[in-house]
Length: 461
Image 1: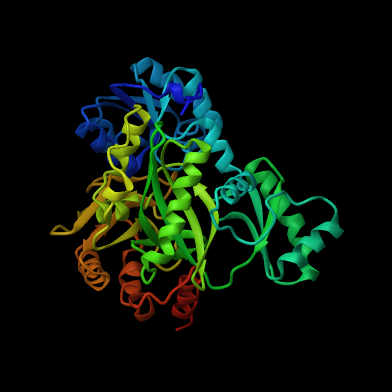
Image 2: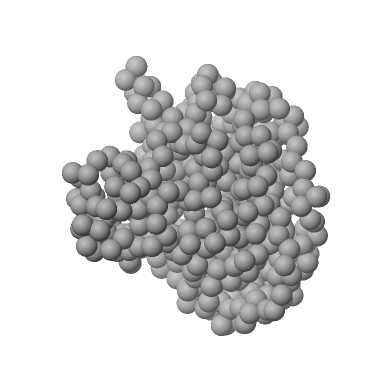
């Protein structure tokens, strides 16, 4: 396979600047140390005392507390990389991790962007072009055209009728649960279009929309892929991320319960084929809705996922190290026949927020006790005395467990949650403990709407 100019930017390097903060900065540092690579940490004024700064080989403060003036400041990050002598940038997740312009700027500066090429990010970041690419590769997609909605009201009405109500309107450049609106019937279609266009324009800089069939009781299933620059790609099993609140994931698990290999196998291989067709490099995640035994592609995340640990626990593959090796130009050191996923894993996102209102909770952690034992992993950056900032995402830790069966993994998570103590701030731990006692969740009888309904019943009780 011929290299593109972007792919040729991948190469050997010995120092990585981590363009992120929090637990993912700690996670990337660990992978780098095990690979014998040096790390450069960056921080805002609010994160000057963060522990991951002292464990990196060097630390540079790049701006004020506001993310817009620090972790989203592309020029400051590129300057920091040059000053520190870094040969690569790892964006982690969030912030600039799926910003094609930033990846391109890094490439032009002679840096390796640890992720896909800027062109791949641009292709898959636009939901319309992503859908078109997936349909061409044979990946099953949600019913609806692979083109942007026109301005003509009559044509929009015809498209909706052809799809069949209810439909969902989505921003082409959207993500994170924003820029989408469900339309149950025709008489509210144009109002929904107008509202979503304006929301998309403000949030993503483009009013471009598309329309799809709204699936009423789907599960959210993900397929993890790893690719190199030499025409090799594998998928590492599947995850269920259906436990969501306001489109934000709360608990993830691998594998997705009740999905037999004969159903998932061709979907996983179609994802691999899609990666090969677009020349994808590094790690990525294909997200699907799954209903009545059928998969429907919704988007691809061209970065490391928050929930990657559950796939690491079941597959035995260090996904972060694999991502770095791919960026260095190494040939993938496993083929599809080598991938064997064993046991079951859960991840709970522990957030600094009120367990009832879910409002963020900033302050100083006065006491911290974390569980230990077989099959228990905690990814975190906090400690007793750590000051939780009000400026950033409320995620403070990820609690991950692994066991031979789903039932055993649930029991292990209950025990691990019982042994997790965070004082001085509010956290969602009480909420997570209650969720893992829920019967329907224990039986795997949930969809992406279940958690919202469960919370409504709890509030009404």
